[in-house]
Image (cartoon, rainbow, N blue to C red; front, side, top):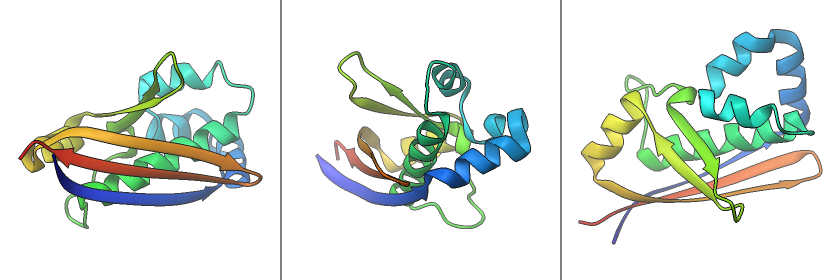
Length: 128
């Protein structure tokens, strides 16, 4: 395996509580993939979930080497938890095209929450 990129991002949880309150469904559609919106409905701490997912999407963008002019929508990147709780990263649309172009074959994801902060790290690898 060859390393393609690493990305890390931090998000303040209370910011996402305010954003959801202010912008509601419009905000959720913009940052969450439909699969994640379904997962959100099962969560007690919605803001914590939103902050963690957002941090993960930003970390994935950094790992992909995204730059202005090659914008990837947040809802083109999504995370689904396996039964054991381990997160799996998926790409759609422009994110999937870029990942394929880079030869991404594996993505490692870690999301953590502590107090008012959510942090995520993404490591992307290729078989090349």
